[in-house]
Image 1: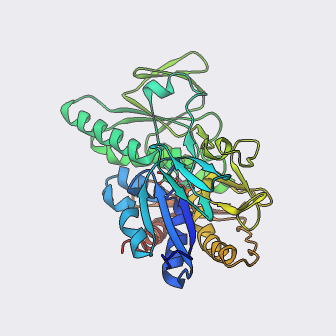
Image 2 (image 1 turned 30 degrees about the horizontal axis):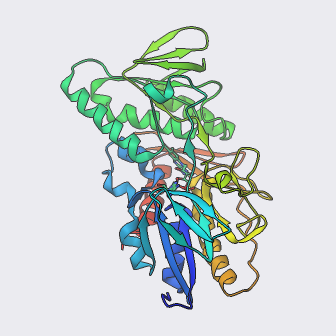
Amino acid sequence: MADGAGSRQVVLIGGGHAHVEALDAFRRGGAPGLAVTLVSREPATPYSGLLPAYVAGLDTRASMEIDLATLAPVCGARFVVGDVVAVDRAARLVRLSDGRALPYDIASLDIGIAPDLSRLPGAAEHGVPVKPIARFADRWEAYRSALERERTQPRVAIVGGGVAGVELAMAIRAALSERHPRVTLVCEGEPAASLNPGARALLRRALAERGIAVEPSGAVRLDAGAVILDDGRTMGCDVAFVTTGAAAPPLAAASGLPVDADGFLSVGETLQVQGEPDLFGAGDCATMAAHPRPKAGVFAVRQGAPLARNILLRAAGRPCRPFVPQRAHLVLVGTGDGRAVAARGGWLSASGRLPWWLKRWLDRRWMARFRP
Ligand SMILES: Cc1cc2nc3c(=O)[nH]c(=O)nc-3n(C[C@H](O)[C@H](O)[C@H](O)COP(=O)(O)OP(=O)(O)OC[C@H]3O[C@@H](n4cnc5c(N)ncnc54)[C@H](O)[C@@H]3O)c2cc1C
């Protein structure tokens, strides 16, 4: 990678999955004429695919983190710890919260989602959002330590029954199994509703077999030590983990960039921001207007290589190439007992040890690429 006066300054904002993939693509294929800087809030970024295994006690906290400060230089890039608050297009500067500014010729955003607890009163004070993962891990470890001092039965609520909530519930159940915990998934509607009927049935059975209660009433408020349900009941708990409430991070809208109806950065088929050919977006923070897909790490990962290629093309003054994300993807949901449920598209579903083995192999293989 070039570092001289003639090189094009590329600033990658956020150490998300697409950007670590793009860095790896620059490392493998070279990035002639580019001086790349990665700026992210923390020196390490967690990989959510390994979060359930970490919660279940199968992986250490360090093993689910990608060390950006080490990875970036190995890929020929500079690493800056910083919180980006604006992309100043007029001055062509990426502005940080501490007043620093990074000049750019080309910039890309991959900053994930922002937790939004505003729709569940009391959640900000009494709930523990699952993202940012580092803060969740701190709270999980604090809860485990508190449990060691007490002899009472653990009572854990997970608010939100999407795939992440279901998998987290089973990981927590596995982690606390010796204490016979009471784990409740507060889930308006059916758990893992985004999956096909076969996979949903397998997960329903897995939840029941582990004694995880599924509470179909919605949560309307969190109090200290309690979830208040929409039928007026109060459900006591030691801790309520919240997996709902993902919102667009404010950076795109605050920078005057085009956003979709939910505030996510609007990008075209080349991952360029609409009307801004020197700006790119990938991962959960961006929506491909022509090919909207669920907010999932697998899509962020797949965008990394085309993103790197198009940054190189743009820097060389050549047209960027379109990228069409796949429609269906394999979802592997760990059930906390050395097994997993697999789902793909509208019909494929299976459960057992093989999907779990596959999930572990895929996750570890992916992480190994980012351990220089
Ligand atoms: C419990 C759980 C389990 C999941 N399991 C799966 C799974 O098995 N498979 C799957 O496909 N998806 C899974 N997901 C979804 C997955 O976590 C996300 O889709 C994925 O992390 C999105 O990656 P990203 O690249 O968009 O950003 P992220 O991975 O969220 O990374 C964003 C990075 O940008 C940094 N950042 C944010 N704002 C700023 C800023 N202003 N300035 C500088 N840096 C900033 C952050 O610190 C972070 O390092 C799961 C989610 C959860 C909660």
